[in-house]
Length: 114
Image (spheres, rainbow, N blue to C red):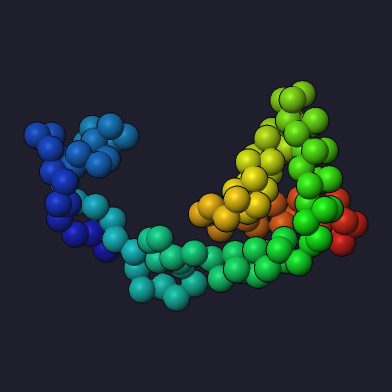
């Protein structure tokens, strides 16, 4: 379903013009499909992932953080991302559900639960 874009620029839609020079000034809207997350709706399992991570003793999380930092220095992309995510968890900062679920899977593998 499309609706008129409220961010119209001189050449169609300011939001998507850079990606689509043929923009008609209309934007796609979320359908009513219940299997699709709404814009800015977190994945329900994100909360479960955060609970799983918070259940790991903080001393173990610090050990994992040191290991991730060592690997991140060597340009290990997974460790770079998971280290940043773990730091956000430990600092109580906001985290995307996508990142928190990735960290949970990474930690489950370290704990041999996957």
